[in-house]
Length: 302
Length: 287
Image (tube, rainbow over all chains, first blue to last red):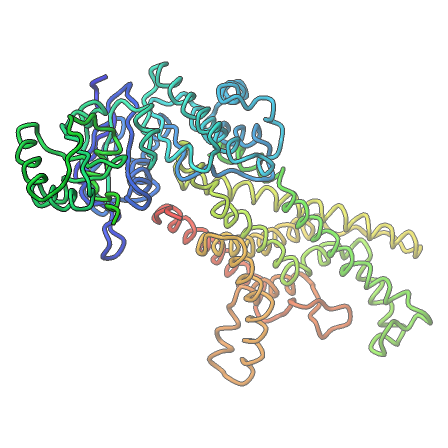
């Protein structure tokens, strides 16, 4: 799981003055599930569009499977579902895949296998327009898997799905990963990425803020403090360690600090009249890391 | 390109819109080319529905237009106006809808080069157009033979060269309008606006310009080389009657000679396709 099959070097896309993607350098390695995590509008889809050649970068470079993005040599080895499934509504699911199969010289056996993989064989004869959103998404994944790709790029594949559909989609992606499939997955759902991804790239406002394994990201230390009044505690703690290191989690303050600073913070809290009721090391979730990195933290209650 | 053509044929031939538009063309060709002309000829007292066709000679002219030897003319005379509009819609929908559905995005990430995919679409549309012209020919021959039989007229077959020339001209006129639709669909990346703009141009703007042209010389020079003028001129050069003549068809004219009109139409087809190809290959697909 070390051979890089996607590398970008300061990849940039400007729309006029606005940088949708700003000097993103990421690496996806063979055999891993890479989670591209960021809030809506962070630049995830634009980045993925550049990787499949739908959008041209305005700066930087990228290599996908050893070739520039969008080259036929690359595209035939990629399966992609970008920003929702796009199919002919008047054709059945099977015929939609047959059209794509004809484009790539595949036969109906490949179509049947892809439909079977996403559990759509029973409804393959129905018109695409009659499909539920979950079925449409699964057909999109089937299309991406049609040519047994070396790299599967899925842009928010659980978007719009109900909980059961999301669980099914995650199980499918995990199954594919267990078969050795490399997956580059974008999502704004932290739990989803935490559940199924080996490594994560966190993007916000077009910039890649961190790239690491989920375990490494969560591994950064924190201290949880329960105090009353919480608002005062948050203000005092922010004054001690900086506002960007203080978040609220389940009625407690999470301080992104090393253990050796705990004593000073607690002393400051007590001095300020805060009743400190609980202090212990915090096991950070990906959500904590994400908010820390993006600065999109929860409001401290008044 | 063969793979792309096969793929596009599969999806286009299963698209109801293609059959509706093709069927509409065949029906309108029969109605305007045969039914109305024949009804005018057969109207009560044999004098037609208007005073314009009140004499026997005119009546015979009407009958002559719907007999077998006139099939090459009937085949093309509806194309500059309503036939062209229908084929423009087909071209615009074929390309524009793909952007609306997101299916181009799916195709462009499936493997083929963008230009290969577009070439496949154009080839598939071309095959459908040729098929449509041949179907029109068969239908027109059938209709004219029926009229000849009903009216006990001798059957004079059209010349083979005239027939081939007519099918070729029909394909060129239809192809030009279809390519215009493809260009519009590519430009606006949606079906509704491309169809709307195309119809406004083909059915309204060109006619308005022709109206203004009689007053302004420079405008006339422009209207003489517009797509609709070229299409109408080619139909006129093959014997199609202009709107002012008995049994004439809107859109048919004699502004340009057949050779010039053919060259102009071929040029339009080329330009429309090249611009579509350039736009398809160069633009981001970010919508």
